[in-house]
Length: 216
Ligand code: G3P
Image (cartoon, rainbow, N blue to C red; front, side, top):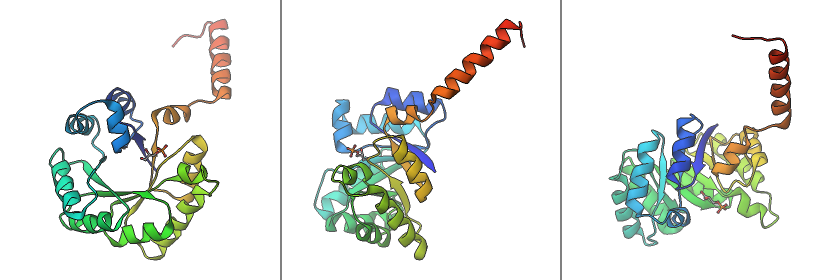
């Protein structure tokens, strides 16, 4: 499973990319707004920090304007994946941009039928929002499982990009369900590394080595 980091904070992205922990980045209008920076500047900087896809979302809602914005975003860098919402106009724009060879991430997916339509529209990625379904006491992971089954049934190449991830269990369960990518907030990504028994075991190893005067 590929790990994308879900942020527009370039210092976070640089640190995680330098550690070799990420395969790409996802942003959305809320995350870019939070950065307080010009949209094109922050996306261009992020695209320089990773060779993987960087999702940049349109803010238009009508078909032609979405296509125009998508073409503008594509010109920022070759690793831009244009993010489009799962609406009728978004699906039409997905088909147009996919036909032009543009990578498209169809986002705000909350049902298997929506994911089926996105695959038929030529989406490179589909972003089912696990956490927001869980917030409504609906099993977000079941959606990932259903999409995986449907995509495998018809050999769709659209990649399942598990999104709206709230913690480490969502990452593990997404991997078990066969998601192709998980886009993870920086803090959650870092938390995957930690385990108290690892810390305890390392401390014991080092104490024993020091006591015995071990040097390498
Ligand atoms: O990429 C989508 C993700 O940013 C949404 O996460 O926590 O706002 O549901 P969240």
